[in-house]
Image: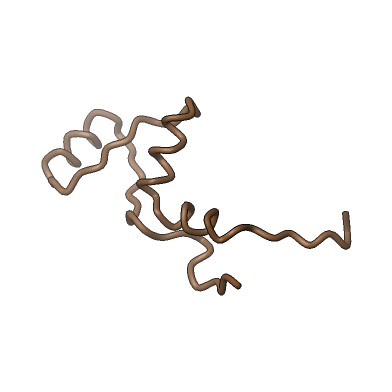
Length: 71
């Protein structure tokens, strides 16, 4: 579809921005996800990394589309 315009609704951008809401919706719909920890406690975070060896730390609100203008 070389001439097709792709339009994402504002709700999709808002959801992608909010990592916590995204994870919650995926989990509610049964989408397989890696084990996840949401915490403000450094000791919990250290224990999680010790248990899993690797972890990806994410800001709760950020996405690759940050800075896009939604019309």
